[in-house]
Length: 68
Image (cartoon, rainbow, N blue to C red; front, side, top):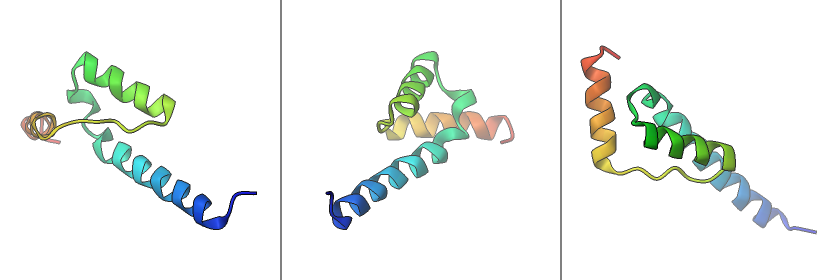
C-alpha cells in the first residue's frame, strides 16, 4: 500500500499542474495552432505545458490589445 507521503506528493504536483493550466487558459484565443495543439496535448495527457517568457509576453500583449 502507498504511504500518505507519496499520495500527498502526487496530489501536490497534480494541483500545481492544474493551477498552471488554468493560469494560462485565458490566453487560448491568442495561441498559435501549434501552441494550442501542445496545450491540448498537455491537458488530455495530464502533463505539464511548457511555455517560455516570450510566449507569455506575446499572449499578454495580444490580450491587452483586445481589451481582455
